[in-house]
Structures are given as C-alpha cells and as structure tokens.
Length: 104
Image (cartoon, rainbow, N blue to C red):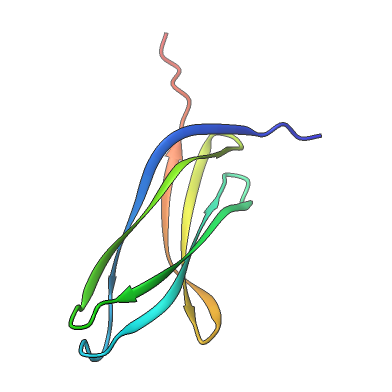
C-alpha cells in the first residue's frame, strides 16, 4: 500500500494563448494540463474548454489548483496539451524545482 503525501499549497498556472488566422471567427478547443513528477509519472490531469472571443487575437487563461501529490524532491513539470483534430498534442512545458531547505 502506497502512502500519498498531498501538498496543500494553493497556486495558479497562467497561460497566454495566441491564435493564428481570422480573428473575426469564433475559435474553440480543449486544453489539458497535467503534472509530471520527478519520477516521470504523469498525474493530476485537468481538461478545460478554451474559447477565443470574436475579435480577440490573444487570451490569458488560468488554472487554480489547491495543491499536488508529493512524490519526492526534484523537478516537477506542468505539461500543456491542445486538442487538435480530436487528439491532444503537447504544446508547452512549465518546469519547477522543489528543493529541501537544509538551513540549520
């Protein structure tokens, strides 16, 4: 039986999206955000709709999270996927390091 340690640390992941093509058309897709831990295990998947307003070339989007599952110190990575033609394609990675504080 594996004991899970949950880090209760509310934070937000902000993304900026820019569309190509005609801004006078609506554009909608889905975005998936997942978290890869230092052991390369992909967890914490969230899927949400992304819809550009008519006339807008760029949009910001934020995902609010209450924490994450701790699986060790090291580099965690947020993976950002965009749904294209029915499949999710990775479009960006956002790494962050989690280090132990060894001060005495």
